[in-house]
Image (cartoon, rainbow, N blue to C red; front, top):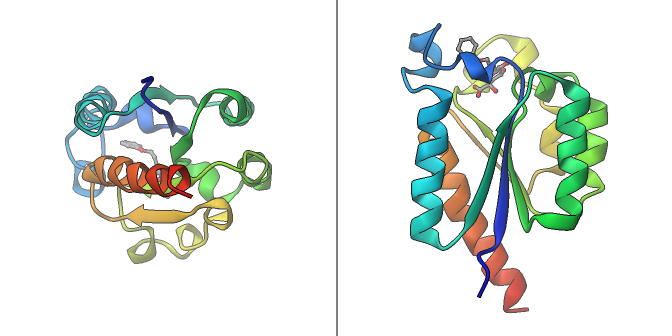
Length: 151
Ligand code: CA2
């Protein structure tokens, strides 16, 4: 049987992971995060399409594409979490389970990071657990998909 495809989408500046601000985001690079997701997916029997963009419209187009091809979306919208109603609308239109991931605990940081528009479209939110949050999100997604299949 074909493995369910999960899109793991990353927003702006996450390509710089591991290169600056290690006290906030740790030392893992985005390539390390992709490897972690691929290893986790292998164990869970999922397929992963891992992407990063610095362009809001591109992120929105990828979310729209997921409607046809993916069973779920794991997304770290980065700065767009706090600004983008357009990204929220795209996620709401997918009707897919969405798990929002933040590497840092946005609630312990500046006030402007405490609110995420995207959370309104999220089945669940994981924040503050470092890059391990991506792996946890894939585990949670496995359960969400299994529950859909057993309905
Ligand atoms: O904690 C997270 O994962 C964030 O989504 C990361 C975003 C930030 O705007 C959110 O409030 C929380 C920032 C991504 C930029 O990542 C960098 C990593 C290393 C160096 C510079 C930026």
